[in-house]
Image: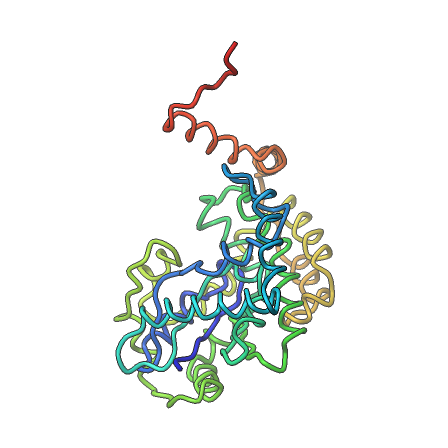
Length: 324
């Protein structure tokens, strides 16, 4: 049977770069960001999905159905794994041994994936949370302090990723982004040893030729960076350097906590010291506060959900008001 590789990471952590490197290997197939497992795993989560068909009722019915299976949930996870495996294999190039699934929000379902695929390979990619935050701001928010759509990635994501690695450390391989871009040959060689495939010195050079041809992933990085570039490591210092932003990120790091940051490979006190020693740029106080407040308001009121419902009603022709 063909095997699987899962990269667990936060968005904006360099996972597309690592995917392009490994996807250049003749024994590894990969494609964009599948997101294949999320909807099926979330079928067994009662209160986190809101659907037209009423997911809470579906959860009750589905739970009753699974309870009647000979081995209950074990049968569901086994069959789901077989279903996913068959689809992964259909996307594999002839002669390859692995299919690599790089879906950043898989950090939400790490225990379930570990349960379904006991023989798979698991790579945890960690990046400095300040680099991640700065990349979110510059890539998706056009430099504005406006990241409500990624609140889950910035707050829950780091904790779930750290917990997942510590729980399954014996089955996993840890990669640090800073080390990957600073010593790519050494890190990729170690990954190949973990995957039990031959290491080729040309893998690093091939990333300029490797195209994912997908809508999701780091499309900007794929277009801009034709080779591994360590310079993004320090970009956060020019993005998070106003007085307001420095105060915010110190609070943010404390919320992530010492233990989670340690798993990431960083020391809380050292990061705070770097922020304190960072020269403060002028301006941005009022604008940043306005954008932060607006983002928090949109997140708390779930404005995006109402927007999607509104569009759905228009497209479906449903009435906006009850009939009298």
